[in-house]
Image 1: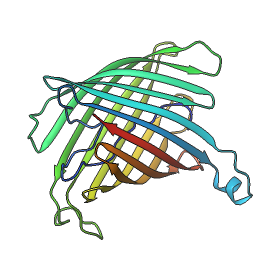
Image 2: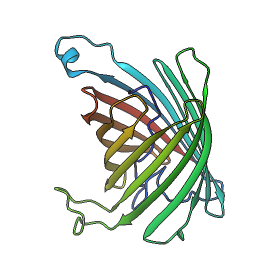
Image 3: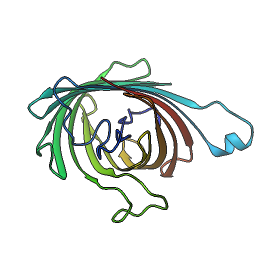
Image 4: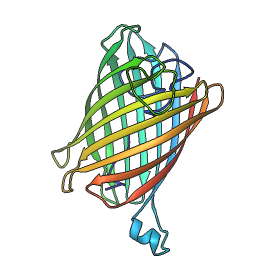
Length: 241
């Protein structure tokens, strides 16, 4: 299941005091602005870890966005696991004004998915996002530490497999807090429904550190609430231009 799809990357960091994530979500990227992300993740069953067995399933993924102007953002989402590969390109249109508290966006795209040595299947993507930023101090958004503001998002995605004629549904809710000018804490809850598999719900806390202007690292963990017994870790690199 971990290798069955691409985890939408980059629900991550607020740059400085800006209450919006670096990628994904409903916020439009400025014309000509570019964001790229690379991630490696590894998952293993706790019982195997306790037994000293460490042969994790790994997944490599890449995500990119470029702002086209007029509230349009072009994105690409790539992933490769032990048995699967997937690539999706999409166009997102932000419905809200750039300075609106609440942000709404719709997206659509095309892609392909391959399992093992079988022929690739075409994919059609439809999505919707809602999000908002909030101020610092933790007055309205409690956290056992002070923060400098943050954001919350809900992303809904449907991928329709043209060969199997079956849909894949994903929903992800994320809240992020800017802890300092160079660090953020992010908490995500994701639900997935893949054909022929049990519904999967995972929780993913992570920390994001800016190592230089425009470049950040994210260290994350992941555990399933239902649908799997595996736990995972991930390392991501983000770059903005």
